[in-house]
Length: 327
Image (tube, rainbow, N blue to C red):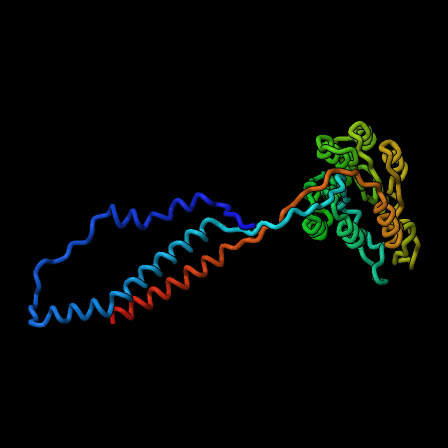
């Protein structure tokens, strides 16, 4: 069906008639500067030749005005209602962007990359698959920031993740603050299923909230936290004395991450390489969604450009007719 979004604009239809009736007409000179003996004959011929044309000009102007007002009222085609299921899940990603994420102990296509680059690639695919979930993004270093609020716009959330940079939130790691921010954002949300996925490569070294205290608050708010420890166990480093093997994840506080997951009914995962993280996200994809009522959406198509185009076309035709009549 066709509806008009701004139907009140049709009140402007009689405006030209009101202008014609209310405004005073332009004065015309009563005398003639030049008298022509056969003026009456010429005047009669002019009325015969232009009377019909004037009526066409008036009719064209009226139709153009009707089309212009119709375009201003924004005609729309309203389609049949479509049922769109929504899972009702609120899912937050908390990604560590502290200085330690610069460690290049991950590989993509056999090329060494830093930890954040690997997270961007795998987590980006995960976000694209979460159709129907409301997804948000928290970035944390020395401080935690809500980079993207909960939204069904997965494309924007993924873009903001891809644009994140190591160190822009500080060099240290405030895990507790990231958890506290997630609890604050989710505690007022309706629904029973609220999930936080925390990705970090270190221990809590900054912030004002202890991670376990924040985990207790998350438990009270029915927030399930899945923690992921990122980083390889061994890495070959070139030094003055030759190559040596080091553990780049020595600072990873796995005990605290495990405890956070246990307190909130989540799980702890260890991602030592890209394949591990892919498996973790595949498992997270199986989280049971919360059932909610379907959302009925009606597709809308704007049609204003059709009457607007017709009004412009008639305006050009009207101008051409005026010039033809005056020539």
